[in-house]
Image (cartoon, rainbow, N blue to C red; front, side, top):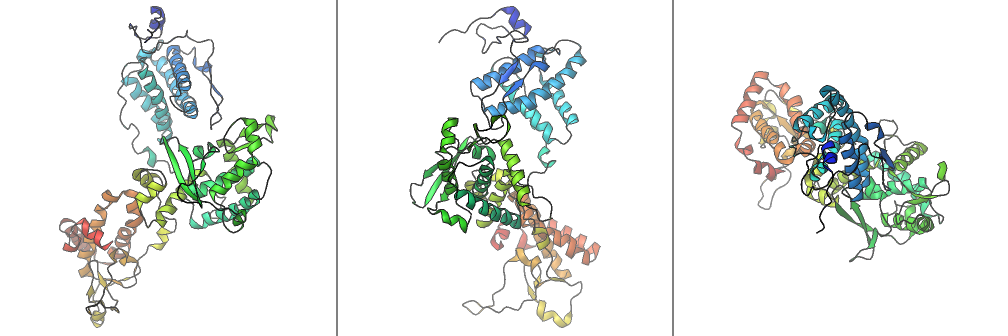
Length: 532
């Protein structure tokens, strides 16, 4: 192995790098360097360069030079994607340099790489929390900075750092993510896309950027893929299915999971099918590949969404659809068709909402199976549950008490309510019998609170609250989102609709008794699984 080149001691000292016999990655440049602009290769974020010049001459040139060289090495050695490195610069580098300006002023001296210590990191975290109190933004900047510092650690430029674990707890709860479309919103989008895709599939000339945006939306609606994998789809992404002639495979690369997403698609041979149903993804992609072949050849790229520019300074030049163009195109398409949400306001449309809608639809069609949902969406069960699955918008209004509450037994109607269930009473007289002639009773106790035959009397509260506490304990087993979707309405109805109708002291006593010593019907979790 070729020995590494040795460098002058004064160079290393000026950058505060320990001189060893064979340093891992010596800092080569003078400070500041002759060229302080870093150029980026083509990337979905369309970032062409980042200028480090404004950060030099502020009293921490050694650190800025190390950051610049770290970025250049990440790009040259393809450590991470160019778009990711661009986000490191636009977020992490800028925020870190703002703090370095304050830190340098406090110490009143030149800052060196040796000043990046555990104490420095902790102070930087507090600085971010003050500047960005919503938590999510601060965590993003910190994560980007941390990624660059980790690369510098690997190259031996700074001493070992113990980064604090989870310095921004619950930051994800402070910012609401995108919501999936409701059923009616999805239907309106699908119907509008069907008409536009039908027109596009009838064309034989190269498609424009606006038409490609419509195709991206149609594919996202049917496949649930994220923005970057869609925009980086290549002409070999559609492959023949190895087992079924009427199906195709969509093969896309998912950066974040460093995995390949393979999805089976129905394939229709007749274009006329688009007149009645939204065209299959395979048909759309193959049509784009065919009509835009010349544009793609001029561009020298195998990206599917290549088109000829019609605006700006590059009129007539071939280019590829970018995330910013996609965002603007979606806004124009939504405005053109005047799409509204269920409240009558302009409908917010983006790829994230398509993905969430896709996963929730799989969850619904699979009968609530999180494992099937995670597998088909190429995510883990934990990620799917925490970030994608949502209770439907109409769920809150659907869950209400349908039965009746009786604070005193009505002796004249005892015969109608004598049929006890593990939850309360039922006034439904059985109309079915089993093969032995015995009456058949309903066992769907999770649906009792939504059943008009439910009857609750004082003597039922012990059983009801035993059931209540078992559902509360179930939250830790199934996860917060699934629990909220399937069980929270029962807890809410018992607390808000049933308990207030009885004596407050009696309810408190029975509720506590049920918590400490539950009814035998609801002592163990497996009993809930049996009736569910």
